[in-house]
Length: 303
Image (cartoon, rainbow, N blue to C red):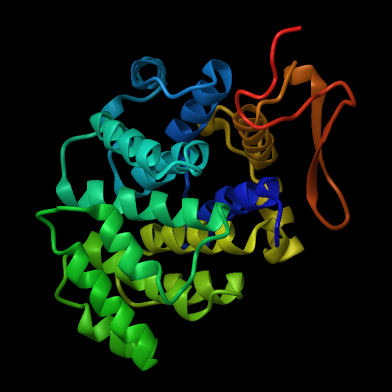
C-alpha cells in the first residue's frame, strides 16, 4: 500500500478544503452538511438518509442554503469515503443523497463522478489511462452530456493540450460541466503534484473557481494523501476557525475524518475521549489509546 487509508481520507478532506480556500477566502457554511453527515455515519455506523435530513433541518440555516454546487460536492465526500470499497453501495448511497437538494441530472452525475474518483484512489485502483472509460461505465445510462465530455477530456490528456486550449474548447459548456472537466484535466495531467493541480484549477479567468478547487483538491488529495500536501498548507488549514461548520477549527474536521475511517474499519470502543488530535512537526496526527481494536467490517464478534 502506497499510502494508508487514514492519510488518503485526510488528504481528501484537506484537499477539498484547501482548493475552496485558495479560490475563495469566504468559505462560510461550505462544509456544514459534510460535518453533520460525517457525524451521522460515525454515530450510526451506517448511512441513514432520514438522519441526515433530520440533522440538516436542525442546522442554523435553512436547507435552501445548502444547495450551491460547492456545498453539495463537499457533502458528497464523507459518503464516498464510507462506501469506497463497494461500487454498488457507493452508487446507491450517492443516488439517495440527491434527495438533499433539488433534482438536477448534471449535479447527480457530477457527484457520482467525484465519489467514484475518490473511491478509486482510496482503493489504490486509479489509473490515468483507464480512469475515464471506467468512470463512464460507472455513470451507466444518463441523459446528460457528461460521458461525451469525459471522452473529450481523455483526448485532451492524451494529446497533451495546454490548459489554455482546454479552457477555450470547453468555454461553451454549462458552468458545472465546464468546472468538472477542467478539474479532471488538471488532476489527470499532474497526478503526483497536489499544489500544481489545484493551482492550475483555481487560477483561471473562468467563474466557479471554488467548485473547481473543491473538485481538483478532493481528487488530488485522495490520490496523493495528506503526505503529498505541503505541511505549511496543512498548518494553514488547521488554524482556520470554522464556527459556522459547528467546529472550532479544521483540525476537528480531520479528527472526524479519522473517526470515520475507524468506524468503517470496525473499531471497537470508539469514544471521543479515546482520541486526541494535534499538529506535529511533519503532519497532523490522531492518536488512539491502546485499548482501541481495529478489524475489517464484521470480523469482530461478541465475546
